[in-house]
Length: 160
Image (cartoon, rainbow, N blue to C red; front, side, top):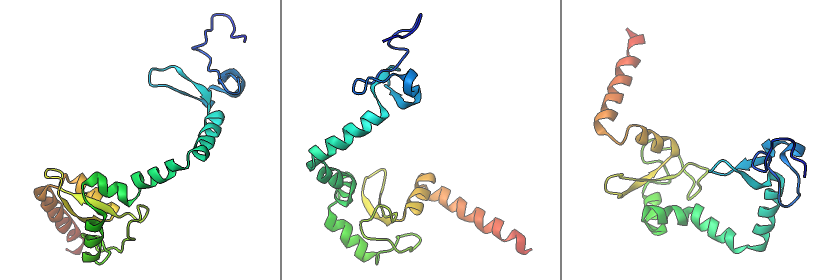
């Protein structure tokens, strides 16, 4: 393979599967490792490889569903699916703060498992926005109180 004068293999990425170089298909078709060196395959070959790998290992789909689905989320928070479902029923399927209707166990619907960051105790189920808001306020009652006062004081200005 011709690399040109003064160029080394580290300068030009080469795919070990299709043998194409960064000069041929563009360096943007290759990713870099954490150490700065080029990965040994292009994006197209990586995509084909992972597609084939998933077909050859169907058991991974079940594992990914358990890891990413409701079972995995409950496991990471240290609660059972039954505890989650009991709380969901107790909250009538709504966010504990704003009351928006949540879909049971659906991540896309924004249902998140809320927990106390100091005790790790499960508190309830929130929509993604309310959970994020609590996080932004660092769960501080004092800061939340100041935010409430701020909104009350500034929303009354236009009425004067």
